[in-house]
Length: 281
Image: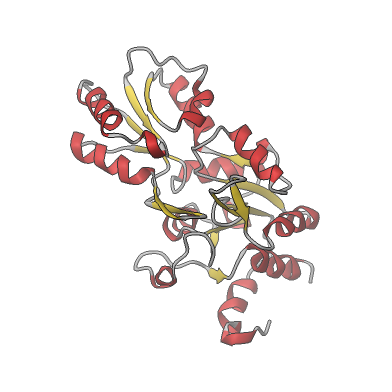
């Protein structure tokens, strides 16, 4: 596998160890498309075709996202309109997962989330809250709303803070945006508590994506743009992980002090080409 620009040895290294791979787990934002703008986002070149290619190859596929600015249905609808071959049950997302947890534990949340994700919580009792759920609330992260969440937590004997992911920032078409993790940390600090994370990089979240595919961790590869939450999270779950040089990727990610991806690729299309070629040798 000789590639231009001296990348061959690194590339070949992960590509040579693909025997037994049965499924791929893909991050969405920054891998399939960049969100924002008029139509809700712009596909990353080659990614629409890459998803079709995975499906045609016989590999299993699950999308694993921390997206909490829309319901899973609406999010999938948007991706379909952008041209992606994707259906709702192929997407592992935090809101449906957290609703199951809230019901199991009889938790009644104060929601600090984006308006567009509130329909996911329609069946959840929100009276007299005994926990706080924080998501990527964007403009709903006002002082007033954060302070209200803080007061709810401080009024509880056993405060429960659940965060839908813990990203630092993400990239939209008009630049970088602060993510939920920043506000999660603020509430942790104010209340001197630790949040429970539902979403990447939590092990249980990756495990539920693998369960959907019926694949073991060592049989799957995660492809994401976030070195810590996508790559690091997947590796801690026993999967291999590639980082794409799209989305929020920055060159310093390749020198990250704690996390080293199994491979770095320019984009999803390149990763899929290499994987599919190797598997059909």
